[in-house]
Amino acid sequence: MTTTWSTIGPGATAEDIVGSLRAQAASLTVFADALADSDSAGSAALQEEALQLRCQAAVIEDLAELHDELTQRLHALDEPTTSLWGLG
Image (tube, rainbow, N blue to C red; front, side, top):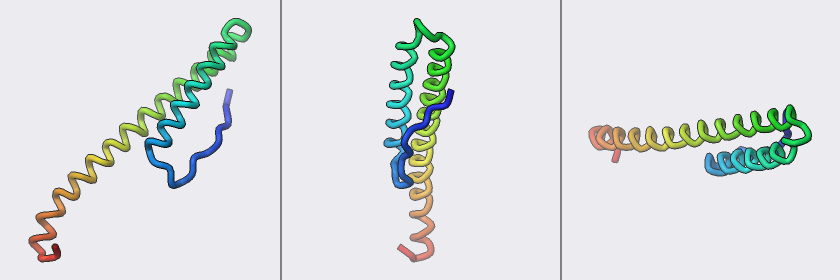
Protein backbone atom coordinates (compact mmCIF):
# COMPACT_ATOMS: atom_id res chain seq x y z
CA MET A 1 0.00 0.00 0.00
CA THR A 2 1.48 3.33 -1.05
CA THR A 3 0.33 6.58 0.46
CA THR A 4 0.81 9.89 -1.33
CA TRP A 5 1.82 12.90 0.76
CA SER A 6 2.35 16.51 -0.10
CA THR A 7 5.93 17.20 -1.00
CA ILE A 8 8.23 19.46 0.95
CA GLY A 9 9.91 22.19 -1.05
CA PRO A 10 13.58 22.16 -2.02
CA GLY A 11 14.40 24.77 0.62
CA ALA A 12 13.15 22.63 3.51
CA THR A 13 15.56 21.97 6.34
CA ALA A 14 16.44 18.50 7.54
CA GLU A 15 14.40 19.24 10.66
CA ASP A 16 11.35 20.07 8.53
CA ILE A 17 11.70 16.86 6.56
CA VAL A 18 12.26 14.72 9.65
CA GLY A 19 9.28 16.31 11.38
CA SER A 20 7.08 15.74 8.36
CA LEU A 21 8.12 12.10 8.03
CA ARG A 22 7.47 11.47 11.71
CA ALA A 23 4.07 13.17 11.54
CA GLN A 24 3.14 11.05 8.52
CA ALA A 25 4.29 7.91 10.35
CA ALA A 26 2.17 8.85 13.36
CA SER A 27 -0.88 9.36 11.14
CA LEU A 28 -0.35 6.00 9.45
CA THR A 29 -0.06 4.33 12.84
CA VAL A 30 -3.40 5.83 13.89
CA PHE A 31 -5.00 4.59 10.67
CA ALA A 32 -3.43 1.16 11.13
CA ASP A 33 -4.78 0.93 14.67
CA ALA A 34 -8.25 1.88 13.43
CA LEU A 35 -8.11 -0.86 10.78
CA ALA A 36 -6.65 -3.54 13.05
CA ASP A 37 -9.98 -5.21 13.86
CA SER A 38 -11.51 -5.09 10.37
CA ASP A 39 -8.55 -5.38 7.98
CA SER A 40 -5.46 -6.96 9.48
CA ALA A 41 -3.58 -7.05 6.16
CA GLY A 42 -4.24 -3.37 5.51
CA SER A 43 -3.29 -2.56 9.07
CA ALA A 44 -0.02 -4.47 8.74
CA ALA A 45 0.79 -2.68 5.48
CA LEU A 46 0.20 0.69 7.10
CA GLN A 47 2.34 -0.28 10.09
CA GLU A 48 5.13 -1.32 7.69
CA GLU A 49 4.92 1.97 5.81
CA ALA A 50 4.96 3.89 9.10
CA LEU A 51 8.07 1.98 10.14
CA GLN A 52 9.76 2.82 6.84
CA LEU A 53 8.96 6.51 7.31
CA ARG A 54 10.38 6.48 10.84
CA CYS A 55 13.55 4.78 9.55
CA GLN A 56 13.88 7.35 6.77
CA ALA A 57 13.49 10.14 9.32
CA ALA A 58 16.20 8.63 11.52
CA VAL A 59 18.61 8.28 8.59
CA ILE A 60 18.01 11.86 7.43
CA GLU A 61 18.46 13.12 10.98
CA ASP A 62 21.76 11.24 11.36
CA LEU A 63 23.01 12.43 7.97
CA ALA A 64 22.19 16.04 8.87
CA GLU A 65 24.13 15.70 12.13
CA LEU A 66 27.07 14.15 10.27
CA HIS A 67 26.97 16.95 7.70
CA ASP A 68 27.06 19.57 10.46
CA GLU A 69 29.95 17.83 12.20
CA LEU A 70 31.97 17.49 9.00
CA THR A 71 31.30 21.12 8.09
CA GLN A 72 32.65 22.22 11.49
CA ARG A 73 35.74 20.06 11.03
CA LEU A 74 36.31 21.47 7.56
CA HIS A 75 36.11 25.03 8.87
CA ALA A 76 38.52 24.16 11.68
CA LEU A 77 40.98 22.70 9.17
CA ASP A 78 40.53 25.61 6.79
CA GLU A 79 41.48 28.29 9.34
CA PRO A 80 45.20 27.41 9.57
CA THR A 81 45.41 26.96 5.80
CA THR A 82 43.86 30.35 5.18
CA SER A 83 46.24 32.09 7.58
CA LEU A 84 49.27 30.29 6.08
CA TRP A 85 48.42 31.60 2.65
CA GLY A 86 47.68 35.07 4.01
CA LEU A 87 44.13 34.98 2.79
CA GLY A 88 42.52 35.65 6.15
